[in-house]
Length: 536
Image 1 (cartoon, rainbow, N blue to C red):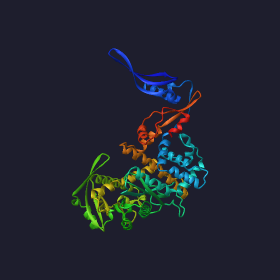
Image 2: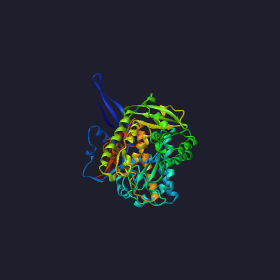
Image 3: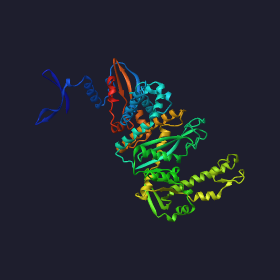
Image 4: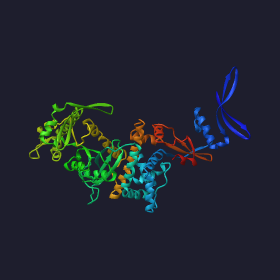
């Protein structure tokens, strides 16, 4: 059995781990490990040894405290510890410090932006509420309310610098060559219907289904791992296809990228965009509007007898089989796929519309603007009936999906796989809208709107950075699982007699996985007040 012994020698005390053992009927002692002189350690380090041993014996460290114990406060340390480290990885803190010095600002941009980021990642709310919540976080320096608003103005001014700083480190960290870029647009709406001529906020086709609200158009470029490449903001009444040229210009001018495949949805498909992609030496994979193709092409593509080849892929643990055929048209290859699962979904959606149409027929006053969406027709705009020809025509497209490409060096299966990953950008938009609550927006000037979007872009980058690093270690955590784990990374600020210290909460809900994989310092159970800064 091993035990600790303190030996005195020449005026010094030495710590040794001794083990007793019996040999030939006699008990002997041998040194298992020597910890050196007692004077080599500070009293605090020795106390930690004792606390740890007490814990290993099943004791609660709080039992070692004496006298009246008072909790002076409780703080979250996880959000700041994790995200300030990633913020530094992208050198955003140094950039904001340079901007602070350049403009001789009285505010500290790094502190203000960090507070807004932590709140956006923790529990999105107004800037005023950000200001009120800042005392919840350990490690943050105090920020005034007006500093938060002014910081958005500078994020707007330097939004391109932010995008540039984020782009290259991600490539280096994950050892990725940028070969495929996914591009799409979405809308962020405002709780307002007031338009100002020339401003970003305009009425337009909203992808959130918000009719009567002003909005902006947000174009996002990501790679196949959802790592951000860049973004652009457009007026709310901009047609999404018209944003494609500027997105390509950004790739070409700022990142000097060659030999790249651009993947985008149907909204980007028009002659001009295809020409621009080819002109810039980019290859494309674009969603094709099957119903808009010439009759001869459509007739060939929806004839199931032409579908002799199959492609099998896995999606969320489920094996999906897709049949496909190809057709050469106007310098590009159209790949049309057929899926029984998709056919079933298309049929269910049509039947749901027909049920809705039957209800609308009972209320003709509601039909004037909606009839064509529900397979209804009328010659005099008063007496509506089902459009049987349109229903039959719609049914003929069940299960079919077409894409087009000018990529010559990829197999059809590879092209299909690239296009399948376009759902990643839909997930990214969902993160912006739901988890980070980018909309509805309550800023009214272009500058504040641009600053708010830049802030959300940084928050998205930090979150995806965590997910991708965990994924490389085969740890797959959702945004909410990460949020829950960070929520539980708390410390209590304790007063015991004249001593002030922090007591860490227990590790649970993936905390250890995040701490270890992200290279964070694990807090001891008890941390003296003056030492807490060493862990943040």
